[in-house]
Every structure is written in structure tokens, then in C-alpha cells.
Amino acid sequence: MESVLAAMAEQLGPALVILGAALAVGFAGSGSAWGIGIANEAAAGVMTEDPKKFGYALVLLALPGTQGIYGLLVAVLAMQKAGLLGSASVALSIWQGLGIGAACLPIAIAGFYSAIWQGKSSAACILLISKRPDQIGKAVILPAMCETYAVFGLLMSIFMLMGIKIQ
Image (tube, rainbow, N blue to C red):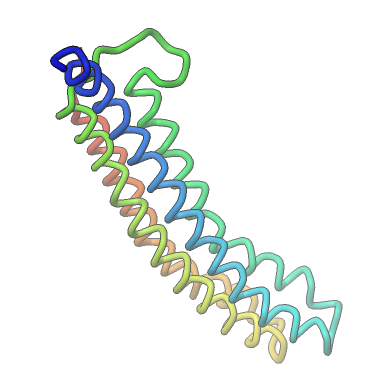
């Protein structure tokens, strides 16, 4: 029984890292997909009336996708820090695994919500350019404001990862 518990304790740290990485990719990616879907609905409606607006709409459609990229970046950094990506084997305690897993949460949460709201903002700006294509510069800036909070989540996750000491 003791050997089973020891084996479980040895694997719990890496499992917590994998859980955190999965949450970062899963939530930030889901928010991006949701946000892009919202913006796609507006773009499809606009392009029904004027297919030449595709280029403008595409720029605005891409914006909510960055949160998924941020989540993937944090997941890779977390797994690399834990030695799970082909680097030298790292002895990881439960607490270190929990810390690395928890460090993935800021981008998971901020990425999820900011991508959805950025998609809504992008949809509104797609409608703006349908009537006023000369306002594309302003139309890109408005959804980018939602991006700010995803960047804060990304930075906080990276700073938290940097603060965890691994022997």
C-alpha cells in the first residue's frame, strides 16, 4: 500500500502541471473559438450584402484568436518548466506541480472571458465597417482594448511560472 501511495505522490506533481496546461489551452482556446464565432456571424451578414468587405472583416475576426495562442504559450512554458517536454527529467514535488498548475489559471480565466468579449466587440466593429469602411483603424482599436486583459493574464502567468523554483 505504501508503494502505491508513494508512486501516486511522485506522479501528482506532474499531473497537476498537465491539468494546469490543459486548463490554459482549453479555456483560452474555447474563449477564442466562441469569440471568433460571434464575430463570424456578423461578418457573414455583412459579406452577404458586400463580399468586398471580406478583408476588413478578416482582420477583426482574427483578434479574438490570440487568447488561444496565449493559452498555448503558457501551457508549453509550464510543461517545459516541469520537464515534461523532452528536457532533462525534473524531480517535481506536489507543491511545485500545484504552483505551476495554478500559474496557468490567469491566462485560462482572462483568456476565456476577454476572447468572448473581444468577439462581441469585433462583431460590432464589423457592422461599423459595413457602413463606414474608412473607420477600419478605429474598428480595430476598439476590440483590442479587450485584448489588454488577456495580455495581463498572460504576463501574470509567465511571472508566476518564473517565480517557481525547481531544483
